Structure formats: C-alpha cells, structure tokens
Amino acid sequence: NADSDVTANGIEATLTLQPSSAFNLVGAIAYARSELDDDDRAVGGLSGEQLPGIPEWTFSLSGTYDFMLGSLDAFVGGGVAYQDERKTSFDGGVGSDGVVIAPANPNFTVDNYVTVDLRTGVRFGRYQLSIYATNLLDEYGFQRATTVGTQGNATILRPRTIGVAFAAQF
Image 1 (cartoon, rainbow, N blue to C red):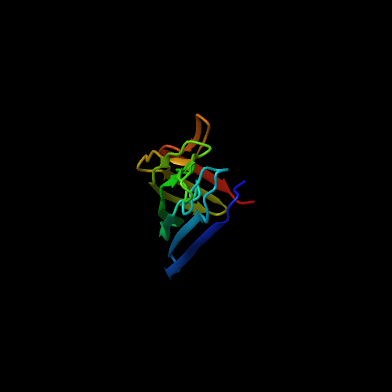
Image 2: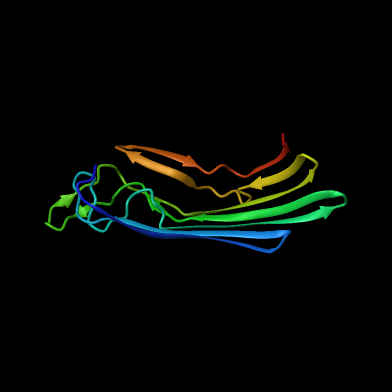
C-alpha cells in the first residue's frame, strides 16, 4: 500500500550450450533493481530504497553429461546457484522534508548464499535409478524472510540431503 511510485529495472538471461549430444550446460543470471521513487511514510521507506525481499543478483549454472555404462544409459550432473542478499523491510530515516520516517517493520539483511547439487544415475528401459545430493556444502541460509512488528518468519534452506530416487515412466 505504498503511496509512492516504484521504479523497477532488471535484466535476465539464460544460455544453453550443447557442445555434444552427450553434454549440456545451462546458465542463468538475473539483475533486479526496484526502488521507491519518493519517500513513503506508509511503509517507512525513503526515496531510492530497494524494495524488500528482492535480491539484486541471482545466477545458476548446471550441466549434465550422458554416457554408456556397460549396456546402461548413465548420467552425471550438477549445479551451483547463488542468491544475493536482500532486506526484509525498509531502513527508513530522515525524509527529504526533514521529517523522520520509521519503517512499519524492523529490517534485517538476509545474507547471500550459494548451493551446490550433484546427481548421477542410470536409465534402463522405462526406469531410472539415481543418487543425488542437494545443498552438498550444507549451506545455511534463508530462502525467504519477513518481519512484522517484533516477530520474524523465515524459511531456511533445506540442509544437505543425500538420497536415492527410483522413477518409472508410464
């Protein structure tokens, strides 16, 4: 319910490379800058402040290599993803008219994080058996965080998870 306008600029790009029929890479990057155009007492933000919850930079890179393992189709792959820091609210401060503007909710900065995933497996007929590791480096971070009054709420990254998956196509 902001009383001011917002200027939002950004760009995102995805590039897929397949240097051979067995190997592919996919990279993605995004930049976003969304800020208040004017001071806004309703939300406690000053002109030029970045909107809460929006990371300025994100990127990911993943790849898969397919090969034969005896008579089975096999694969190995992995990926890395980055999410930039972001704020949970506005900082507030002294507005352009000299009046103090206080944010409606306390602000804290959610740290950036990097996750790494790996996977390998085999395909046989309509079945696939794979082993995977997500968040391999066991990075601790917040996927999402908000504050309301004196309360905070956050969704943390899933800790390192290693598992086996079996799939069948019907």
